Image (cartoon, rainbow, N blue to C red; front, side, top):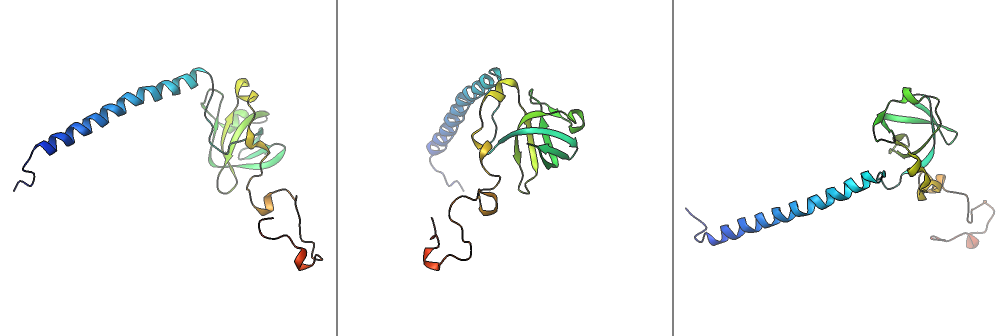
Length: 158
């Protein structure tokens, strides 16, 4: 039983698929050229929310990050300025300027050692708190000291 009596529909569908596939191959080399140009300029793309800090491996997984004791996450990756993997034991005791991200548990999971060109660029997220909710934000704004009358307490959204 042939449900499609007219083969014209099948030919149109095939032509449309081939046209879309051809458009995809035309766009892909342009995207590849952009990636190669970024690599040629010596820059790397860092994920959103990447922080900057001074990094030192004390005794893996123990690290110092901006002078504070921290831990590397299990499976943490450290990348060199050439974007190659570095073992923590190879850089023990060295003070390095890095960009880093944290995992859901707050452990340092991805670390990129910066080249001199990357170190010049300022990170906007470096001054932001680790997590943007109550215990981790600065103590600015009105607070309840327990003696403030109810009608003078800050309202929701203030």
